[in-house]
Image 1 (cartoon, rainbow, N blue to C red):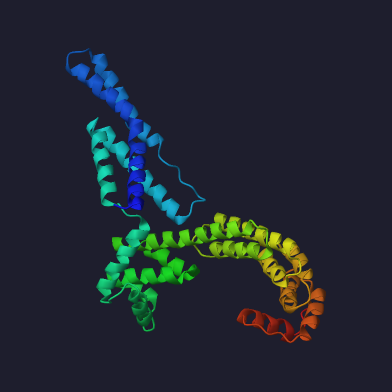
Image 2: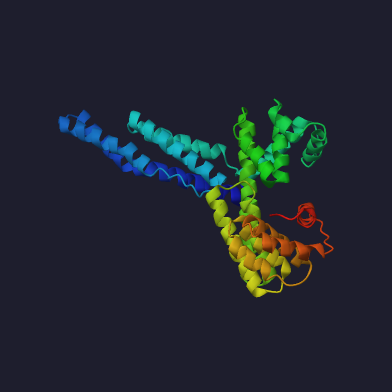
Length: 359
């Protein structure tokens, strides 16, 4: 047993004790009073034993973890699992005085013994199983196999099929792809008929979520220097996590606020960076802060990014129906030879420069 496995088991034992300890004093008192009643004490002793026994499940239930709306998918799954365990323990303790507590202690201990690995280790072992099912020699070949299959049949069709091994491999490939669409398919797989596919999808989502949070922590350490580039990278990390599809709307808004803060600090550190003006401007615009976005776009310095800032100003002018300003901006754009590798920006440039005047 290695150190990581030992720590995992120790944490599991501590978690089991936290569930059982609240009921232990009451069940010990129940056992003592019950013994006295059986040896000839008054009926009040039996009443006392009953009362103390009723407090035992109540004590277990009082320590049930609360649901958190701001938790990530992995945390929510763990909270729900803990709630189910607390509820089951309370029911068993209620119907089986004293013995119920001992029985649940045995069950929780056995559960830790049978789950000595964390999700990442289980994910690795499942990849090996998927390799065997798919008939490939190495785990890395699973992705290649599925990419070839996906050229004929989309991953969505694989997930709708009945081959559990192939579906596990598809889930793994979605984890490699990442992005909002992949996360949406992974979330759909959480309701798959196969328990293995559901578990594999949950583990993949947890791993994806962890990769985003770990990246943000690393970028935060770099951004502590106050350098504009490091702060911009941190802002990018917040945006990627917000748009990943992994978080709820409330958390998404919080992440975009933190991204805005990071970009603003980066712009303060390097006000001459036109790319930062454009990035921050479009982020503010997506958050519905058109006035702030307009100020940022107007402050963009001359250079390649200036045209993108003008495109942002066109969008604001159109949304606010400031057609006079829009006409002036379109004249500015008409004299520019704009080149970009972003198809969306090229389309927007052509739209604003080639369409007729708007009344």
